[in-house]
Length: 423
Image: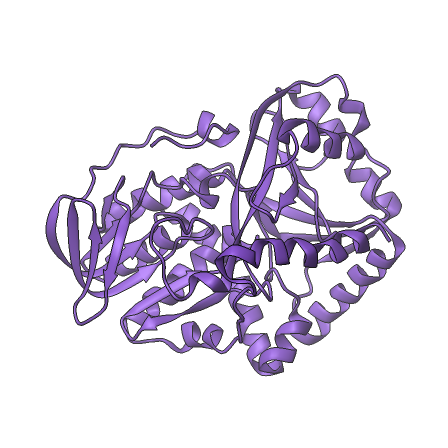
């Protein structure tokens, strides 16, 4: 199965088609899911000398890792305040440090393995109303005073307008340590690096069963891997294989468009520095420039699993609310996909058995954090589980309603947040 039609797929670097798993093989570690988290774990484990087999149901980077907004941002999908309430200040600080290290790891991976993924640094959170302006000021103070993260700079209305040709935003918080990239090319680069380190990747190898034990046996339609450890990194794509951790995350649809090429002068008149931008609404808009001078714009979500509106038309309308001067511009690419959210919007890392680990619940922060989560899982397999288990202390609840009613229940719950965005 090829990648979904998107700007990223259209501009991806050539990648080999990896053969499906055939027959029975032995490994030290079997990883399920060749996104950023899985490829990152495979790279670290192979570099440590482990025999690693990575199984992907479709193609490397087929899911959220290869079609997201491509923004690498500090922190998590939830606030540090909520983490403190769950695990205390000391552990919340340690989690924050991990999120900052995730950005450093991304920078290191790209440089060390010469991954050509249009990486640029600089990210701007923007406020659409005075309440959000105050929240950004409070966030800047909290990060500096409580967590020692002093790089974000607060921008008033005029400073935001000096960067963005729009009147929609009243303030912003600029972080030079966050950034953006071509997510599919980044994931393909991680896979290439993992293979160079000795990992073995099989595409078109959907897992049909995990038989717990020692060794654990991971079955596909035409093969089986026996391994000392297994690691699940499936993100928002939970079809087929079912585990007890599935109900702790919800696949949420999100949508992105790319304009036709605008040329360097027009795109820089809109976004004057090559930074990524996201507002702070619950149902947020996010955008950035591409390497070939398009505007990549994301917005809208579907909590029901059904895209009830024409994706291109609806996302274009959100884009024109920010940049009405693009009314004459054609959309060349329109696509969507699923992100995996947890009830708390905090990441969910844990174990299904002592030798079966999982990573999920990145809640829109997977570009940097999934790569770091892969490293934490690799550390845990190697006997250094302190940082992996740190995140295991976060309490996670299953989404209510079971298989039949959890999506309708979530839709009703999210209506309150959508209304709050308007206030």
